[in-house]
Amino acid sequence: MRAFGYDIGELVVAHVLLALVPVLVGLVIALPLGWWAHRSPGARRVLVPLSGALYTIPSLALIVFIPILVGTPILSPLNVGLTLVIYTVALLVRSVAEALDAVPVTVTTAAVAVGYQPSGLFFGVQLPLAVPVLTAGIRVASVSAFSLVTVGALVGVQSLGTLMTDGFQQAYPAMVAAGIIGSIVLAFVFDALWLALGRALTPWVRARTGV
Amino acid sequence: MIEFRDVGKRFADGTVGLESLSLTAREGEITVLVGPSGCGKTTSLRTVNRMVEPTSGSVLLQGRDVAEGDPALLRRGIGYVIQQAGLFPHRRVLDNVATVPVLQGLPRKEARARAAEVLERVGLDEAMAQRWPAQLSGGQQQRVGVARALAGDAPVLLMDEPFSAVDPVVRVELQDELLRLQADLGKTILFVTHDIDEAIRLGDRVAVLRVGGRLAQFAPPDELLAHPADEFVSGFVGRDRGYRRLGFVPATALKLTELPTRANGDTAGPAVPGEWTVLLDGAERPAAWLGPDGARHELGSVYVTEGADAASEAAGTLRGALDAALSSPAGRGVAVDREGRFRGGVAPDDVLALLRPDPVP
Image (cartoon, rainbow over all chains, first blue to last red; front, top):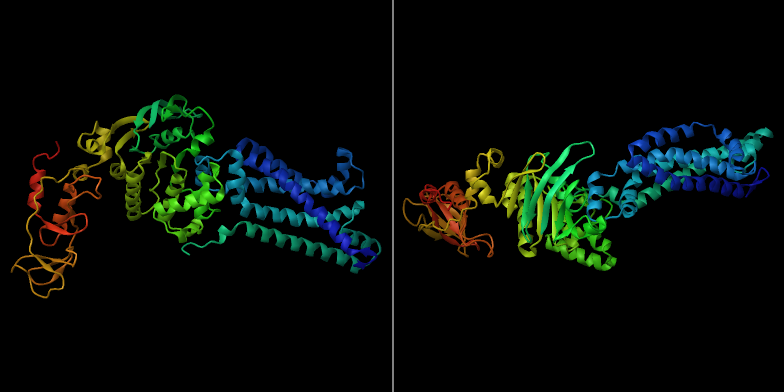
């Protein structure tokens, strides 16, 4: 589908990949960090405020500084991706720690007592039970990523944000509006997908007492 | 057999969980650790499966020091039942019970078959197997907890206040269930509770602990009640221990009296004018009292002349006899055999006569 001189389908795919992949990568990084914060009060006192502070760095500043810090080409989509990974980690470390805190101690105690190794305990018991709280955190990170991707357009990284920057330069409000509405719709669609995934993974949450 | 040898535990913050505990839980018996909170009973239980590592002394399980080897492997060979069951909320009942067999390396299908057997054993029907733990009552959850501990076929069970979160009626049911299972399975059970009644009911031997894990007395329940070692133990076993103790005294010498009987539904009046008559159903089981006035009355509690099952003692206990005699509206109790068939009457005076000189040898 072409509009405003762009292949909209291509922009949507770029937008989704650029938002989704960093969320997944960020989640993978946040899991061990959050687990550490959950385990050790000392680690928590450092990790949670530190990750909170990361989130306060302006996105444009990160996108511009990352090439200087890691040596990526200045116009690489990787700069936007890394920025979003940092924001996701910043949001999720606390979420993961709190999601693991929410797992009842009797359950983890029982798991240790029946003979789970630490890895089995994490993947077999703690992580599945952390899903409800964790999903809430991932949804915030995802919505945030889908909106921040558009900032990349300022440094020439294509996404639906490109419609906003170009539309602004060409004084073409319909194009700007298309970019805004498109990115909001995508954010909502993926938010709904995360919600559905979280529900699919937790059928026991809706099990009623006394059925 | 579980052997504690001078086991001590000093926590990182300096508090003493256990001073130096030495005791042996015998093979095939229920050994109960009882005491006030802070007496280290849970700590001692947890040194057996190394959820707590002692700072001194050692714990031997079937003669082997538990400190050797991988703690997770050790734990798969020890059943563990926790307060409030600690079921995995994200697994259906069947898979909760199959947990240990799966960890032991059994294919999932076989593990589930094993789990289904064990669930039946603890009296939960098949319909329960596919439920989520949140869909069960507290008592049912606790049964599943017991089933999960049994599914690994471990010879040793650790039970940490397993029944304290359920209401008293269900608690007694679960205790009976445990005794019934134990009569079949003969596990070596270490059972922790703060409830002295539970300890006395379940324990083959009861260890009373004081704060700091110091052993105040370690004895079979009847001995604990008859001869408390000191003030602490007698205070802990409580004021009505005399009555509790009757639950351990067989009423072998109790002679049953004759009582007039009549078939239930017979519209004629009392069998003997002016006397209470026992109405019997078709299987000779007492159904109600017929008063001298011709009105029907509740039976009250009955005295079962034999132990609860063939394995236990031949005579009922003095406590059962006294309960029956005192709860009957007729001034004498009704005695039945194990199948519930009418055997005779229990006169309060006869029970009291047995109590007067100390009936305990």
